[in-house]
Length: 172
Image (cartoon, rainbow, N blue to C red):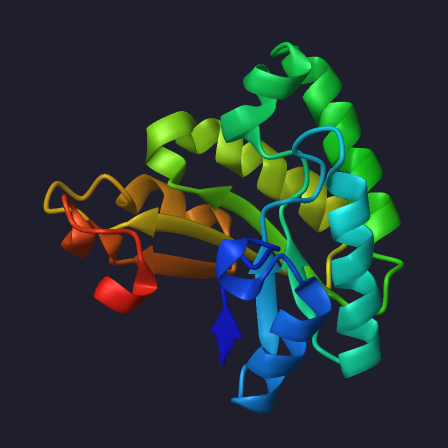
């Protein structure tokens, strides 16, 4: 059983090590994170996740060079993004804790199926044995269908249920 979008935050006291240990104690055995290479400063948080993952033997899925915020932090040069994607997968596949790659989140909101397919092919060429996962919320329009072919696992997100409600987990 895995937990998605794992990172330091106010709900875990900004303590990655303690949060990961607690999650493992209650049965979570994998995690996925979107912090890998987002913006300056992520390296420290990423290093903490890798260290704790290895210490606790909890495999991880990382999102290399997330497209959805590339423009915000890196100026939008997509050729540079592809080079960073390759670099992060080459380096990440050597980490014992790397279980796979998150290649899209809310995918239909921020990329085309062709763009996802390109990332999938790049990752598959570098790290053919790792799993890839793409996540999107399920709608009634079938918007997620064209994306499902470009990842090994499709994560069906059900979060529209909280639309207009509090983000506080204690109030959901």
